[in-house]
Image (cartoon, rainbow, N blue to C red; front, side, top):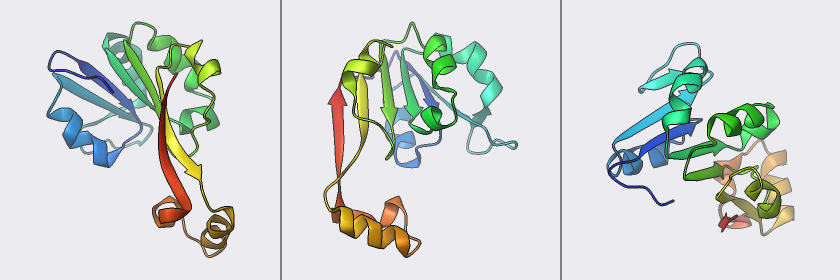
Length: 140
């Protein structure tokens, strides 16, 4: 994503590995979560109403599709220059998301379905997928 020192970034969902690299490059990073007791400078979901419309870059967890909050969040993000959907469940449908202002889709593409089934059947999750998946980012 294109971010700079004058940008304010809104992150819906805590993407731990991205937090420090983004913080170093931008004016401000607002992280929003549904957790009842915010930690690590995480703001409550209710703060999106005031802060998200002021963000130049917005990163949305793909979970927002599953919990049916994406429409409201995209509406609050209308003025953002960049909107990315991130996470392993990101659907790679750039032609659909582009119509809603989304500029990037980033997630996982399954390379070895049988290995994924084995990992999941043994109680494993995304962190164990390894070479069974490829990280993929698409501009929409």
